[in-house]
Length: 424
Ligand SMILES: *Cc1c(COP(=O)(O)O)cnc(C)c1O
Image (cartoon, rainbow, N blue to C red; front, side, top):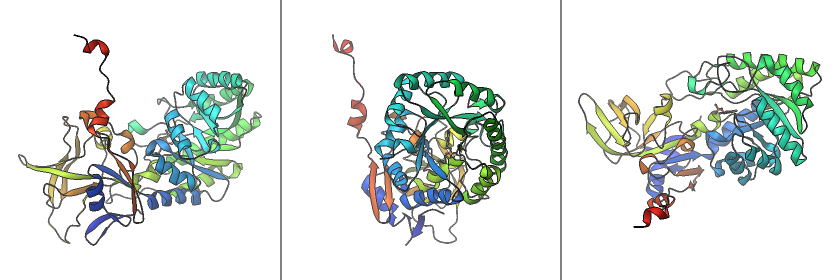
């Protein structure tokens, strides 16, 4: 459930008509619903209420500081994969002891920064990484809580670009090698083993791969404990999928996911950490855009909108589907016709949907791309020199611009012409 509904014939974000946001901020613009973000966070929190736990929002899904502040104030921890994300979480007031640092390629500078400023745990992904972290922590005179991300070799049955738990993926350490790696960590200065980490992929629509992975983590917990390691926390990753098309079967809900976790690892007495991103932010945001032209083509009509692949890359990158709705509610029983919905960027890949049945639309009409809150604005670029898409957060009848659209001057003034090009 989300808070983007028609009211008096106009699609609203909570109590704010999208027409109002388009008038004030212009289009394209991302619009998030605070109530939906909080609701999704709480669903996970409740699903794990049977034991000690921390829901660490995966910042990479939607990283605006206002969104982090909203979730952080509600009690969420944060899962970050770069110093930039870490700094955003801190800027939102989230204390270091609620921030987990994940990622395959943490640099020395990043390690130093989070060690100095405070971190709940670092999830290690390789042996060179653990040796480097040990050296830096020892040098700084700190002992950092660590887990090792194990690769359980489970097929997440999701899109190949977001599948991370098979042995051929670049992520983590093969689970069969884990005992050896933990033995080495225990002997290294500056590192304190606190648990195990696993994350098998994103947009999972079936609980079975989670169950298989968590069962392997439970076995490993017993084995590592027998080896004398203190396994007190299990970081079970993110990855629960969302419905992108209303017509599709709904993916599992957080409560059922929480039950799988309880079934598989609940008996171990560990604190549970999870790192959901997409499920919290995905259906809490839309991309609002305006039709520039309707172009009649041969055998098909094109709806050319003012959003493009640089603003929302998921259809071009993953072949992703987004439900698309007109902001003005269609009359019941209106006849629909197929449109190709495209942006203005000079690439054929700049196509949001092909042959999508829509009520007839004209130039100037507003439409909303649903389920765009996660991996939307964060992946935006200025390709084709289109200023970075702005973001708006709505809560009840309050709305605020949480990232302003840069002016053309701001965009261009970031470039500098070298002195030697100016000399005659
Ligand atoms: C991307 C990622 C997540 C979040 O995944 P979602 O599918 O958005 O829930 C969590 N943990 C790690 C390590 C990730 O890389």
